[in-house]
Image (cartoon, rainbow, N blue to C red; front, side):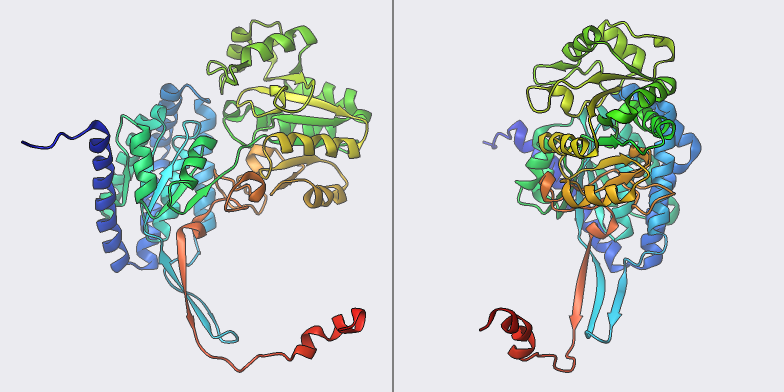
Length: 474
């Protein structure tokens, strides 16, 4: 009598088979590896999306299947994020000797991590997996994607195009695979337990599961971007940049402005500039109705997340002044903390605004907001006083201070700043993450050190403690 295979066992076996194929493909990829081969593999995966016709098709499909964002901005995001990543890695050495220091006697050799597992969100079901795949292949790895249920179909289409490009250069298709639909927690958990490294972008539940899986994991923290506009700011420039950032792809980005803190001295001028840019501040009655509609049962209304502003208005059944030209909505914050959900991330075309008597109070409000949610991710500042940016960097629990920029374009890398292009922002210990920088290819590369002897460099005890003894005695 044959053993009965339980559904969970069958699902786990599916993942085990994927991992086995990925390991075989990765081993051959590494054994025949060269910088040229790794670079070509990364370019092949990237061209699968960078081709304009395929980008448009995938962006259209992403919006149709997930209901999140808008096609025009997804096309832009897919193109710019991938192009920027390719710029970043173009001359990066990821195979063979990458460093040789005669002074230390250490030679560094780049090695793959093996099989990468990547959990990707429905908010960016094309750009994020492409970023993960390109980074993995650049370093000689294989990768298995675990898409969200809504993102599975477009992920499968993306991989199909990647495999077409692989065939052109004789690359094994098993280097890039995905957990097949239907997506389930059993499959995702099994992937987390069996690969060599995990990269997890999306819900904090997935991040926590990854950290507890027993596999080394690179997770990212929750976003709740807070931006200060101080009394020295160019209010028109700030309003235009905030509007462009907040409305991009209907606020699907974790780097979209969720909270604004405005110094009283420029309150009226800034609100006027924001109104002219398309930001509509709601009166108390309509703000209350919007909050009641958006925040439900401890979560967000799925009919308002990353939707067009007219749908947000319709679902909330609110009245908005000059609604036809509105681009996003503003509500005044009543407080900060779990009792005031408007102080947290909203993933919608809704931003909370607080007012402060001066910069000191503004900094304190921003710090309290990030302590509630979003610690480690990023803070924005519109100012002409650069010392204030440094002060925020020294006192606020954040890994990034974005100065006078459209936040969602800047945080994950831009062509006019030095941040690496990425869709996954590490939040350091403040956000419960193992990294405090933008996820990039170096996180998917082991480095072996060849260590040789050098002339002895052993100090005396007196050399180390001499100054200390003079100050306090032995």
